Length: 376
Image (cartoon, rainbow, N blue to C red):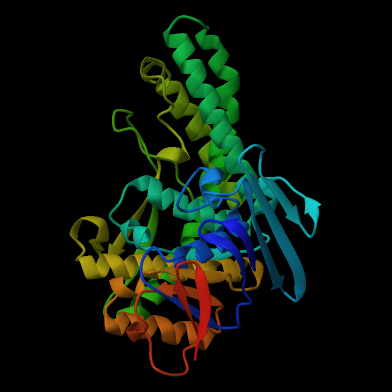
């Protein structure tokens, strides 16, 4: 990996060894910037900022990231160029591509302190987790999500115009039919993915907790409480589930139309759904202890690793950003043993080498004021 005028680095060239690589340093020394660059090359976005200009070294007009990698024996290279004056440029194997073409080229799973709120935080966090997981394994899903987000935005704009008597309600018919079709496809794919994710998360939670806890993950379809009747019966193949969801979404959009116009927002669709997490039959978000919630978040991330491997044939790169201090000694031990056993390429940042065994864990580097040196 090469960084040029990226965050705190004027110039940095790194070659990651196989297995586990650990970057040790105090806070605000540049450790997370390394993980951020790999994550950005994977998904075309940062987990820390929505502004690309913040990725550029403060005294430079532009910056760049280059990541070379191999997937299933095929070598590739991603180049990203940032500018304060122009739009970013993305190259895959030296050919310009659009952001949506980048997703899935280099797969990663990031676990940061913010992800500890994955269990107890807002539904948006769990939806984002699920969408990122599926998108890396399925470019078609990513395209559908992009389409759906655009449709919701356009429908919301139309709802406001209808409310303000600047447009006719009859115009909603075209948007609603498209929205229902896209919503059904997305929700069916999510439900299918959650079925596999739950099985993997259950295994990971038992492994991390020493077989004391069993995590269950289920998809929670949002249905407005004031709309009577039961939700759709969603089961079977992806095609069957999509077929069952399509008429239901059409019905819900029609029933909620007047309220949506009044509020100026779309109240039905996968952008309102959630994941329900339980441990040993108890709602983890409401009644789980802090330790159980943290273990649940970690189990979800490790399940994501296995899910992507099952879909693509290879483990993604795991990025652990300063989370070792958030886990107790037994959970740290189980996590490192799992990573070593499965030979998962992992990049870890931490403030203290004491979180790791003295020998045999991987390669260590010290990070200080934007300078990276090997530890022997």
